[in-house]
Length: 377
Image (cartoon, rainbow, N blue to C red; front, side, top):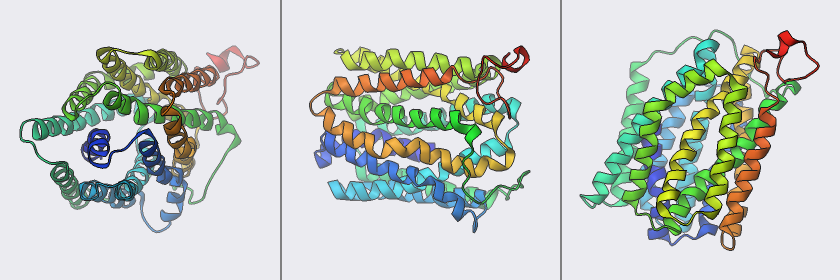
């Protein structure tokens, strides 16, 4: 997933500006459309009536690769909207099941470190993708279309290999095949909701600022992404182990304080090197979002995980459907406001993070001063 999606992601801003003359309005609409399948991720639970989760994951991973492979053939506004939807359906449905299987298959005591290790592997895949894009486009002058097709087809070949090589793994707990919303998960839902809104500002507008305001080339954007994922390779597993050691409450508090500072700095930065540094720091903080997933794993009933993974993806994408389009219009007159809005979202998340218990578990989902010392320590 990461190898192929990283190519789509790193080329996007330059491709839409150079080939389709996008402004902030068009990129906002495209990113809103990209998030619609994420908003509809809850429907995955109904498809699982016919497919096992592992098979489901491979089908939609292949669809994502197909969407990337055909992107370069449609360098128009509506063509890009169409190929983005194909890619996004595959991406979001795969990621929904990916999250579910991870929480089911990995022991609670090891999940934070495991997710950190996965981020490190994603960093390696992204590093390979960005390095290849940089070399192919800077030194060999390969076209966007060829790069998209090359990585999309490589991804499809890898998916076929995964299907042939790996057996179907057994699941320890039979998952519910219906939508489930539980009152006791409200804090998890709220953190997920705000995380989705805040993430859009980073994904859509931080990268777009690098190209539009500071004139970063596709090679420079690739190098910036390479730096990000070198950090992931070096530190993601350590961050995961640190989360397992200090707990979700402290990890989320550190993340949100850091993001308040980063987004506020985005709003007023005028130096391209400082902006690039902020982008790297911003990306590093997102590794701490592991803590939201491990918090849910600790409070959830095992049989709720698949259903809640779909619901949480939908919650995560509620604001993602309209925030890029709305803020894309705002961007035309005030990019500063867009990033200050991100600071406000991070501040709201910080307030909620303080409600996470130091040792969350079923029955101890929310911090309360009325609980006994044993409950809250």
